[in-house]
Amino acid sequence: MFEDLRDKIERAPSKPGVYLFKGRKGPVYIGKAKDLKKRLQQHLKAIEKDPKERAIFKDSIDIEWIVTRNEYEALTLEIDLIQSHKPKYNVLHKHGGGYPLLVITDEPFPTVKVVRGNSQEGEVFGPFLQAGKAYKVKKLIHRLFKLRTCDPLPVRKEPCMDYHLGLCSGPCCGLISEEEYRLNVEGAKALLSGDTGDILPKLYERIETLSKEMMFEKCAQIRDQIRALENVARGQTVSGLPFKSADLFYLMGNLIGLFLIRGGKVVGKEIFDLEDEAQVEEFLAGFYYSNPVPDVILTNFAVSKVLRTWISSRNEKVSFSQEIPENLKNLAEENLKEDIPLDVLEREFSVKLGIPMPDIIEGFDISHFQGSAMVGSCVVWEKGRMNKKLYRRYRVKTVSGIDDYSALKEILRRRARRIISGEVKYPDIWLIDGGKGQLNVALEVKEEFGLKVRIFALAKEEETLISENYEELSLKKEPILYRVFGQIRDEAHRFALAYNRKLRSKEVLDDILSKIKGIGEVRKKVIYRNFDTIFDILQASDEELKRLGLPTTLKEEISKYLSKNA
Image (tube, rainbow, N blue to C red):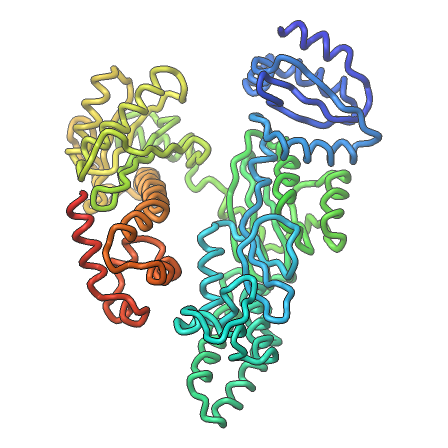
């Protein structure tokens, strides 16, 4: 099979185009080239040193190519093919699904929607790097600016429950004029863009008029709007940047940081770990395949002319620059740099723990909600930093009720099987979130599978690191080691909790509400709109439940159900 691929490469044309390494179920890798034959020969030569290249050839049964007239056509075709087939070894499609966006629709009485992709009718804001934040901002806009919640806009004689909950201004019933509604829309856009200079004077003028007319309830609403917009205007540490809409991509080694700048302020950031620096342009193309292109794209690396042309086709106004303001550059480097030099870490592990510095530490935690939605997490620290690509989460399968030890044993045994089978890199250390009880569970699994890993436990209350020999080290007195082990433990906890919450919001909320008497469809809608999880309901005050028209016995009924089914 390998010789067949070699022969096929020798027959490739020396022309621009796109090539496809094809597996049994479709393409496993797609690339573009100015010279197809030369690029494929580079792939062939790279298998001597690059494991990824060896894997591509191993999984391929054929190579095909499509000749294009120029590099630009090749790039456009490559992006479309990758997004269509989502090959295993391409990174472009992993960032091309599109982050959530908020759209203020273009209608007489606009609403706000959470969407993905570029083809939207209305004014687009975002992207939001966390979907949860997009939905929270949407909810805030309904609460502050009362944009309609119905879509499409119906015609009613009486307003729906959202109007009475203060989430909508009732345009369906003519309870607000188009002029007043437009002011609310301007406020919502200002909140999303960060550009509050024009709307604030209008709101102050409006509140002055309403106070003279003794309409104090509406004055209170506008006061809340003003406060929210002034909080946006105050901004954050890195503000006053000369960009209304810009994205910064900052490359440092294999890490690339994305920083979103809107209204002169950094409003979001995310760090990505590429397999190598050569993937950076594929990453950029993937990001802008489904996300809006801002007015300015800042990079600390050169972007090829063909990629700039393709991005510009999605926003003719975009400009590219490598001139990054000093305060923005410092922010990017602070977020990307490795916090602790490796030589310092080596000395700490040697002197304080008497062991060589590990290459890989795996951290584990268990999370559940009163025995339900029990999950586990495994996070990986590799050579000085967290490697999110290697994180894994587990749904506990064999444990019912509240039994953290049994759940931890299941997760560790499943991980141990993957280690001894060679599916994952062999770790040097296992770090367990917990005390001596959790440590003993891990030691049992270590002995069962004959693992050659060191095991430590770290309990949050005392911040004491416990070794296999039950020797204890107070990490409060060892800030460098605390930074390593504390970060791993906290990340394992965060990752497990996030998965647990996801399961709860998706399964538990709907399941429990369907089994509690007195919760009909109307009340369900009120609950779904105001609470994300069962936990949020249990935390709500009686006054809050009353205000939403919900019985105060709701919390008691939920607690009874959970206790009965734990």
